Structures are given as C-alpha cells and as structure tokens.
Length: 328
Image 1: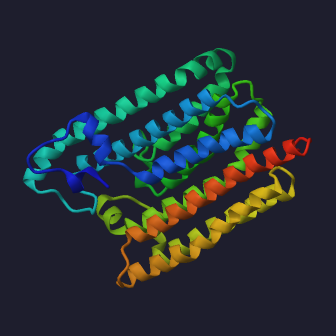
Image 2 (image 1 turned 135 degrees about the vertical axis):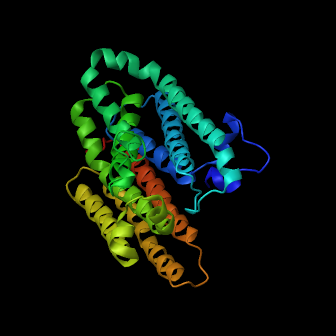
C-alpha cells in the first residue's frame, strides 16, 4: 500500500508512522529469504553459523528493503501521482510535499540503522577484506538504482534487473558473510550459483507487480516489460523465469552443488498456473482483482524459499545423524 492511498486529509504523518503505513510485505519476505538462504548454505557446507550475525544481517536486509520502498513512494509523490497513477489535486499536492519529506527522512533513517546493524561484523571485515566488502556494497546499492539517482532504472525498462540481483544473490552473500566472516571466496561464488533459482523467483514476482501496475506505470513514465510486450508477452517471460528456476535448481542438484532434497522446492513451481490464470482473468475484466496476481506470485515465491531453505537444513541434519558429512 502506498502512502497516497491512506494519507488523511487533516494530517501529515510523522516519520515513525510513515513506514508502518507503506509496508510492502513481499520486499521483506524476499530480503529475509535471501539472507536465511545464505545461512542455510553455510550450514550445508559444514560451517559454524553465527546466529547473532545472521540475525543482524536479516534486520539490515529488512531495513534496506524498507528504505527502497519508502524512497519509491517518495518519488511517486514528487511527481504528483498516487499509487494508481492519478494526479493529486491541489489540496493533496500541498500535503504531499511534507509527506514526501517524511518518506525520504524515514528512508535515510532505515539506511543508517542498517549500517549500524552491520557495523559489528563488517567494520572488522572491511579492514581485512576491503575489496569484498566494497563489491557487496556496490551490488546492494544497485538495488537502489531502481529509483534513486543517478540512473533511475525503472524509467528505462531495467528496474527489475538490479533489484532482483541485489535482493537475490546480493543478500545471500550478505547473510553468508555476516554468519561466517571467515567464509572463502570460493564458497561465496558457490552461494551466487545456488542463489540463481531464488533470484529468478524474485524476478517472477517483480514481473507480476509490473503487470498489475501497467496503467500506473504508463502515466508515471515507468518503462517495464509488461508495458513493452503487453500482458501476454509479460506472461510468457514470467513462464520462462519459472522454467529457468526449475532448470537451474535441477542442474545444480544434478551437478552435486545442491542436495537432491532441494528438488522438493520445485513443488512450489506449479503455483505459476493460478498466477497466469489470475492475470488473464483480471485483464479480461472478470471478477478478479489485479492485486491477486501479485499475491499469488508472492505466495509461490515464499513457498519456494521456505522449501528450499528447509531442504538444505534437513539434508545436513539427516547426513550428520547418519554419521557422515554432506558433500555438496
């Protein structure tokens, strides 16, 4: 829900209220899933997972997600538009300037709090592995280029790509480094490979969001695949992403990089059927809300992430109980 949908006529919310009114549930789920995947991969590789560091990384990921969503909402208000792409009237526009200020202030506060959360782990790490920390910072910053200067990729049709990379492999690496700062570069490269299926699933949800927001984006000047290729074209790309998720996960399991138990997460892939059905029914003007398209895609992503992470933890536990070591 965007701020402009709930902004009362008699007040401008103060900073602590702004975030609570502009929650984007999927952003938080995607961030937590990627971070916890990093911890699960470490566990599967036999590393000792520092739960405190993993919790701090999860908190930082949620704060960064909140900052991006708040900044995006502020950008909408700056352009004088509400969530549906409608131009704000004079009274709402007068209130929107103060609301935009609160949104940007809250976004900055989220980034600062995220930095403080990561400081205990990443300040020592920056002294010993500066290049690695800088590379991770650049990847996470790429997620903000969706709407932030200098490029604002959402206006040139590339917004979903940096966001999927940052909120997929980027946060997975963040989770691994926070949970085990001694992890090797080889293990980090391994985590990037294993995060590909989850990144594709994130891309599927982002595309579902673009399909829902076609009318709003057309007015706002945002360029997306859903606008360029139309609804049917976007659905075909969505099916390709889901197929890519299945192929990449199956390939990683076949190569021995993931345990075969991880294939259970493919059970979530079948949920793409109700997603595509919701798209076609919504745009055929039948009794289906466009929000159902995004909701069903988010459920698919969440189920995939839970099964994926749980399968890694279960496979390691089962192997240790048998007196062996999981070889992946």
